[in-house]
Length: 211
Ligand SMILES: [Zn+2]
Image 1 (cartoon, rainbow, N blue to C red):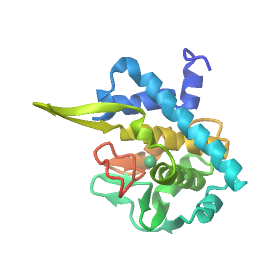
Image 2 (image 1 turned 180 degrees about the vertical axis):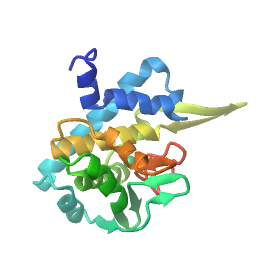
Image 3 (image 1 turned 90 degrees about the vertical axis):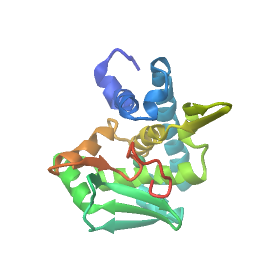
C-alpha cells in the first residue's frame, strides 16, 4: 500500500478511520502522531479475524456464520430512528442477537446497488460479537486518559477502533473491493435529520450492551 495514494487510502479505510478518530471525543485523545498506527492496527485486526472466521466456518456467508455461532439475526421492520440517531444494525450480547433495520439497509442499498448491503451489516455486527466474546477487545489497542484527580487516573479504550475493525472485517469476509465505512452516511443522508448509528458506532454511547 502506498499511503500517499488517496484512492488506496480510501479503499483500505485508513482515511475513514483517521476521520472517525478525529471526530470522536475519546478517539481524539490519542495523540495525532499515534492515530495512523492505531487505525492500521484496528484494520489489521478486522482483516485477520475475517480470515480466521472464513477458515473456521468454511463459508464467507455472515448469516450462516452467525447461525453456526449461535447468534440470532433479526431483520427488523421497526423504525430505525432513535432520537436524533438513525440505526442501521445493532448487536446485543444476551442473548446474542444481531438486529438489522431494513429501512436503513434499503436506503443504503438503493444508493449502492452492486453491494451486498444486508450481509455487510450482519458481518459488521458479527465482528462486534467476536470482539465481545472471543478476541482481545480492539478498543484496547489504544488506551487514553479520560481524567485525573489527585492520585487517581481514569483510562479507557477507544470504541471507535472497534468500529474501524468491524468494517474491515466485513470487507475481508465478503471480499469487498473497498472499505464499507462510507456506506454508513447513506443511511443518515436518507433522513431529514440526525446521525447514523450501527448500534456500536455512536461516538456518544460506549455501552457494550447496545453495541
Ligand atoms: Zn459497529
